[in-house]
Image 1 (cartoon, rainbow, N blue to C red):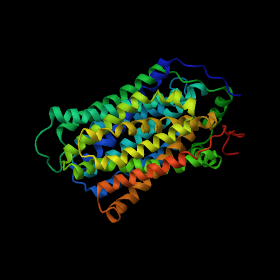
Image 2 (cartoon, one colour; image 1 turned 45 degrees about the horizontal axis):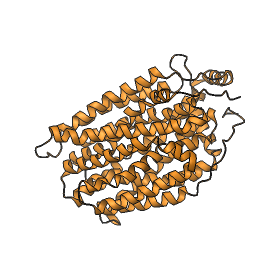
Image 3 (cartoon, helix red, strand yellow; image 1 turned 30 degrees about the vertical axis):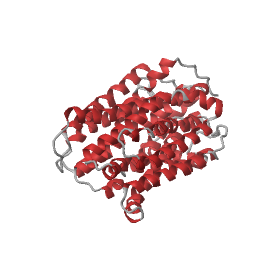
Image 4 (cartoon, rainbow, N blue to C red; image 1 turned 90 degrees about the vertical axis):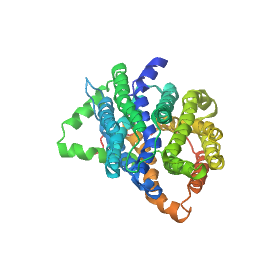
Length: 442
């Protein structure tokens, strides 16, 4: 029997999501600063996709496993989800501190792998954490609050990049060296990654499991280690087998959406080297301004989307936002004024707010509470699989079919966003599925 969850106040929901600020600051640096660092350290544009393969692979492996394991975890002192995003935050904090100190390309690539493990370990249980705490009526608010912190975290990361370049930059670029002005953004991220998680952990108690759930957790703990090791994989396979049709349909939308987003993040800096004739530092700063703009919009509109989704439905708002993002990316290559090119980011920001909140809210309502962790992990697999495909396939597509031209890469991404929008309109919502047998081994 499911026990009704109490409604939380606005500030309780705010506090429980503060940790997302640090996680998303880290992701903001990955979007805008990691690829420029690879370029500073001597990487060519053609190999940028494959250098980013760490994110998809670690996400594919880490997120569903951590989700399944956290579903069967409980500590009276630490809770169910908190231990995982605490460990992830510590890993992320260490890597962010070391990243700008990278002496060579191989070192930076290795750090990206560890950083992605930490970020994925922190983020997936955080998605389930919100679903655990909130009643259905507050799900939209909870996940759009996360969108607000997604915007705020990435906004701070990107603003720091161009502000520190303006304050502390200057001088010629030296191949093989990371500019000193870029250090400060990563050091701030190292602090925020851990400090914000600690805030949420200290302010938000987890809901204890029911007697039935606790009995299942204790039964799991009593199993031999080898059996416990197999259970997450069994649960993932079982969950995929019983996955709602809604999630299968969403996975197709996600393929085009996230493939396109990865292209944008990888090639926005090369684009400005092509269209505006900037050097890498100038192009990275302009890309950071783009990201800052759209994340300001995200932070502003995230909570506004809550009443809109309640009135018009999440599917329509989500699909319209994807159309807007497609239009924004189509426009960017044809605008050469560094100020006017920020205008399309308004549409991009609305789209980013919807992407970071609406799908999670919809999925949270169609999966059973006792499997929320593993299904949030599977949802994130739907993000990293297209990203992984992009890292392997888009390098050859870029050099062979797109003429090695960053403008064509952007138009390709915009086309994929338009396809995602059309497919989003065809999504069909459904009620939550029920697992009759909670033991994946029986």
